[in-house]
Picture 1 (cartoon, rainbow, N blue to C red):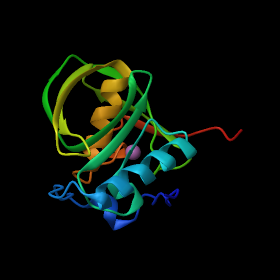
Picture 2 (picture 1 turned 135 degrees about the vertical axis):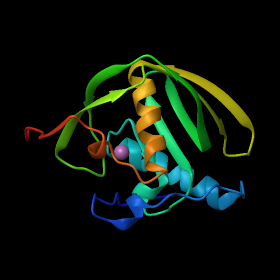
Picture 3 (picture 1 turned 90 degrees about the horizontal axis):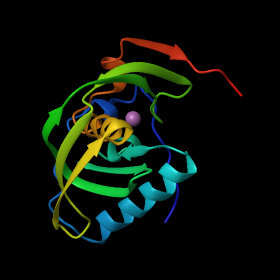
Picture 4 (picture 1 turned 180 degrees about the vertical axis):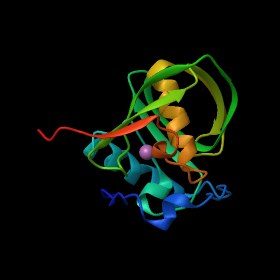
Length: 153
Ligand code: CO
């Protein structure tokens, strides 16, 4: 297991429509393990496989509600609206103001291929929407009402 390099905007892999996972095997488990190490090392709220160079429909989400591994995720329904700040590990040093649904229901498979559903609200819903967008080659900067530089510490 290893921390992976997170590609930055401009890399064409971030603009691909990712392929569905068909094999729930050791390669997938290794990928998910590496994504967990990487998202934690980078202090992210989530990470999508294309961000480490693999155009596959796999995301991880690390929020107050828990740690989620979502394979072949699909949003089933969405409700309400929230407007707030958003960043991305592939757009270093920036943040943007993005409109998102306030509540989403999603369906996904776990690393063993078992189907699950989740309901997310607030920041969790924002993270789900952001990460799932990555699987269709969409970045938050495409949707942001404004993008600004983060202050350096
Ligand atoms: Co992102």
